Image 1 (cartoon, rainbow, N blue to C red):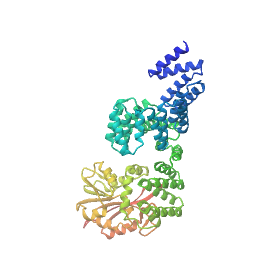
Image 2: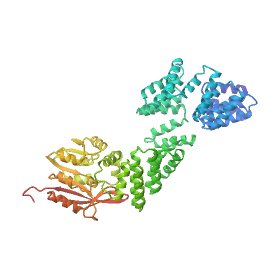
Image 3: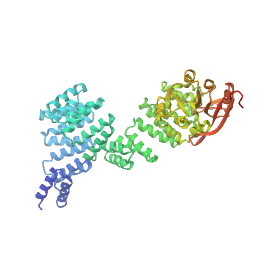
Length: 591
């Protein structure tokens, strides 16, 4: 078959959207006649449509090299692919070449305006949009782009007017949707985007925008559908790759990893791809890989609080507290409102203190408290390291457990927490009312619940109480300080009061014990025989001498006191020793 017939057949296939078949014929032509600029240009357009910009650029350069004349279309296509490939300066050079060869092409000025807009050079962008309109005063896309350079309060009515004047054009609707999304007016954003989608349902950008709108407005299933639809239309769309990977991370991590790596391959500077891939690796406990991927993310965006925080946690867990603290303080600098970061700094300082760097940890804590005087976590750990009394810091305890709530039970499981099982063994089947002080997520309630009792849970943390409520075992859950509750609301018929991991936040539990009298009581302490009463540990929790606690119980009339020594949990690989006290007052005449 002759060259012309082959070429015409390939063109027909190309126009019909059968890119694979067209490409096969184009390459067949090049095998016998490799210097065909039109064929090279068309192959470049196929690569461009598929998002393979590096290949497209190489093909356009070859077309330019072999074209004897009329090179402007090839330079134009080259500029588009270079812009898509995030090479703005090279793209601008290509478009300037088009202007020198064919100054009448209005689209060239539009693309140059877009390039300068993306680079933040708005005056240059405005100039090129205006030049495009000089070539064609009715150039709709140039009008839209020019409107977008104005202040938002001016842009919105202009875009709305353009959408009314040109109801069959999707661009104004698209940008109205984007502006509404930024303003968090998600219903209006979705309405505008749907209008655009009705006009061009196969448009990847509009599907992507709808995915982002749905994701932000909490419509996760709809978002998923739009992101995967985007990926069908544009397999190399990087935001779609990253978002689809996010949806697959839990159910199909292997496929998610492929999508993240594809996004990184297409754009070596894509922060979201690196960050989310690092999170995936961290969840899979592939810590060396996660560490390096977080480092890559931070090189791209050193101001990311999330990347610095997550990398800091990995380094803390691997024992590099010095670098971990540097990263965590960097995270705090850029997101001081995120209390999770302060919690992580506090925990890392405790690890640093325990590693033999107590003096350095004290200095860092003091400096943190001085620089962030309103930060409750900084004040708390500084006071702990100085040995100051922090037992009555109820605001800190409430905030700490609110943030701890989401991972509370998993953490306790990982440290071998056995108090619920032991409380059940010691308490037996309790009939009547149980008051669970510091009930947390309801683990003690779960252990003690029987059809013969009702349990009232008391806690300062609303998030912990929400977790306890979800278990449907408590007759009542009350957000309260336990002292206030015992003074004012304790049912007189109470059969048992429990306090698991409560006394470790009190220096002197005597007032609590007094208010519990004469009710049967089970509670735990962390133990220390080094002092006659109690001591504050570097963790911010109190350890008590069992003899000191025994004396308080005796003072307030408890006559049957049983101590059960046990390991409460492990901490940094070491056992934390404690005692469960099971106490009650003997009735008159009983031994």
